Length: 581
Image (cartoon, rainbow, N blue to C red; front, side, top):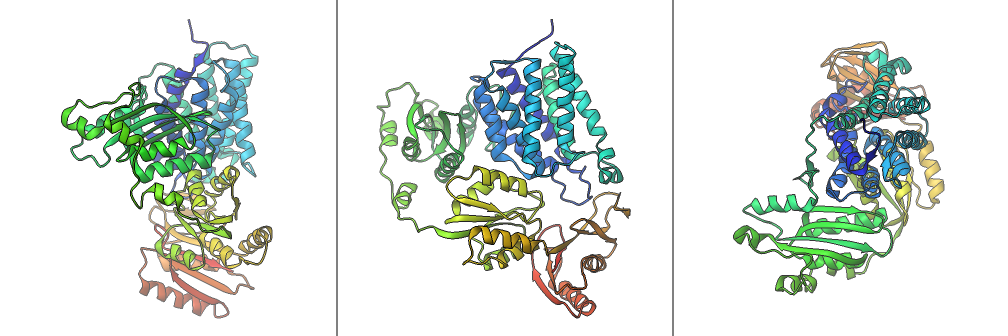
């Protein structure tokens, strides 16, 4: 008899199997990037997004129901979302879990409705949805599911395998929908990533043996284990040198729901006093595990959010030496260790002392910029940017990274400069999750656009006026980047060989050749217009100053009517980043 329903336990295992399958294929998915640049990151972004959720699912262990599973999947992927593909994947998961969270088991009709809700949610998250992408693949699978339900299919195995097969067919057709994919000879990388998630999930359902273990804060946590903290604690016991001595676990029964800000604040506090942190939030409870030298600080902070239960504090140093000392959550807590943990004296300079220190008043405006390269970051700091998020094309920051940065900026209104088209969605998602501050995302797609935005900020203008002014000014900036090709391909009718240097403009390939300076010069030629006044050149970590000066001289001779600025960017992978205004 075939299985006709999926319960929370089975679904959690299917999700973990899908995450693991995506993780195993991430480098291959990275290579599907249309542009043959050495920073294809779709696989990496999608993997980091789903693994953020997988770690929370794994931490739930065996005591799992549909609501807690959906909370872990939706919240984990939302906070961990990186890049456009990662944000879209998080929205697909968010829509899917929104439909099923009240169910005990999933039937074929319920799964079909969840697929449709996933697609609807993801399409709404993208301002200008483009067909031939992960969205199209997801919609294709959902459409097929609806047809199967109408046909009366009641065999779950047939249903899942048929939906997956059709989604794979839609993926194979993406080059026919996007000419740039066809010319490059690849399918959509985001769509391929989604197929890998679905394939892993279906394989587990069909009985394929899959290792569901994964890493939680650097420690191995088995999905089959019912206690996320147990595995990390046992590994700590095996280490001769223990940095943080007390394994501390408890559950917070919340006074009010844990919003994103509260959760990030609490996790940041735990990180300041310890490591091996697991913090899984549900609607009314939070499960906490931390290794620290002062459990009392963790407990006192937790008490500000609600009452505590299931408290357990183990002295790992004594356990390592004697294998005897343990304190159960059911014990009365009368041992000296427990008493000290509950009533610590906070030494000077600890987190408790800093909490009572007077805070500086909020200023009106603050800036956050995403930057890659020490030179670029220093430029932003010199222009008054409050906080730099290290990242960019090679490592897109997550929604949680942006939210954490917002909390560090002491301003009522915070402008975020993503400086990369693949970070804008995550920044917008962070803006939706920010409650206590106004977060305005200036949709800068390149670092030169970000620099232009900051330069055109006027303190005396309102936030809305500044936003409109900066958006207007960045549209006047053309950007070109010089890097190298990692494979043979054809793009924009230009034949590219592995190892060639490429000049990539705002809308495509501007130049290809075997000489860095020659390609950079041709790239600028493709951007300069009759009314151009300023050419800015930022040289990367692989270009020495003498060569950069020589290149500047060439450009100055070629464009005597333009001002030429040369600055050290220190960016990796891109030999030159250039802008024309």
